[in-house]
Length: 148
Image (cartoon, rainbow, N blue to C red; front, side):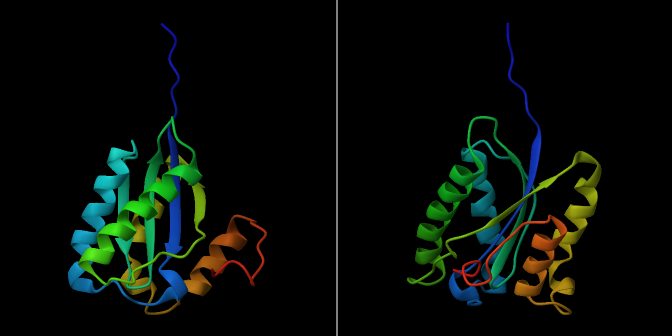
């Protein structure tokens, strides 16, 4: 019997619209739990997630049967609807996102990085962090459009 097997890890990063800090700390556990639940319903296992007030870092496995674009689109739509009910009626994610591959050998390093977001962001803002990802992964971008 033929099998199609895959194990692809992604570090997905995106912000709230205009990087407005609308995710309150007291809501973070519920917001993260909902995000994990939606990811699982799409076939994506979450390794670690951390929501800051203005952005999210999500380390997950890409399901074998869905594209990165569809995974991000579906989770953004579902979580936006839920967060409009729970956080603010105007809640929105930015239109774009970053998705970066993570090798099995680097999983623990990325997990620790994501878990350490509050400490990390005492020293660096989201935009600087995101530009560093783009540079590290040698991703070309246009500053004019990356912050939609």
